[in-house]
Image 1 (cartoon, rainbow, N blue to C red):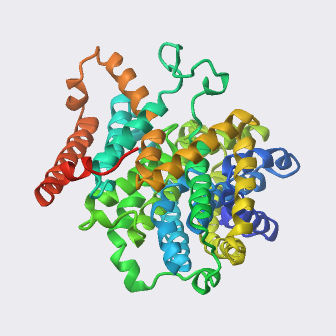
Image 2: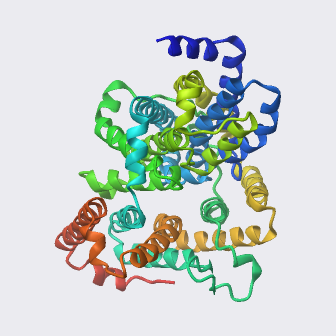
Image 3: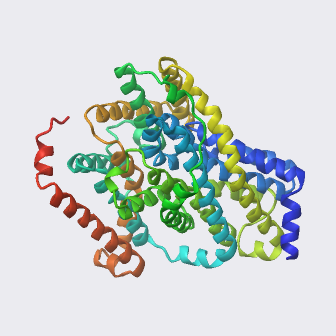
Length: 503
């Protein structure tokens, strides 16, 4: 209790509250701007923490982290331009809901579920951090592959009545994910002699191109404008208690998934959001509605990615191992003040640890207000005619793509994916399977090859391990059931698709 009283004093002092609230607001704004994210924000702020005491500086970094994880969903919902990679899944249903005149409802669901996911993970982190860290250490390459495979089976569910197209797009995404240096042998693959592809295709650049540029080109071709009465009046509308009760199991499941994936070193919120979305589709009674603009499609990824943010702090604080890119940067914040995160920090600086816990509680609650403020600011852009707004988004997307690694190669890759996204939309190919395969393809390939080497190239060993075997069995069973149910209800599905005009 004495430690908690000290933590309350540290967090609820006027100066600390100012930095926490300001950090959350800054994180949400950074996350909402394509090309910027919480990782970049925390990295830029570390030098400013020199002049602060260790507690205040680390509370600021934690607040920016919490806010930045949510911020990307605002631009994903309003403009189909994910501000951060973990928000790309939110756009699958958030943007269709916004186009249907329910942008305020979509924003309200995203903000509230993000808050719930964040609070859940911080609560778990506070209660059983050491135990969760031990669970994370039991994961090896077969378990990582099983997670990636389970998420990739989402492609079958997202295909709807066009499964052949979905599988084709998914295979293209997996192929693109292999571009660059082979992680095992160091050999160049599919670079065609262009140095810009040696590092592979940055999936953030691909997201910006496929979603933002592709949408701009499609809208320009149609000659439509976002200036209708329903589109202009965007006001954040939180879901009612009845609506939240309908989402309760989805939110709870996503919070658990996000927290567990968050504690796995190096996995992060992006993978968590894809896995959470895939499980929401898997457990839904109406999987065909996902991608059309439903509340479950927003609640799952938003709960997951914010729960993963709290989960990623578990290995950082208990073992000194970063659980994500942003927590790796936060380690720098610890070291700036002469601190080494890990088990000894709980013994030597318990008041600091509990101050961070409490600050993350406060940050997730304040995110409700910061999200509304930033959403209102960005929603005002929808009042602008698309003939003006479209080119502005194009410019910001280009600057964001260039700013990721200060390379013109990323800009050309963004343009290429923009054209690809446009062609896919024009010929009724879903972009979602491409992005899912691109994001998870690298993790699946690398973990499979390393796992095969670790198990002496015995694939059966993947099934014999308790965790990976269970995940693979469930994923494979549900995948086969999805195929069976689709073919049973649509016996001529594949034949009908093959008759459709293709690229």
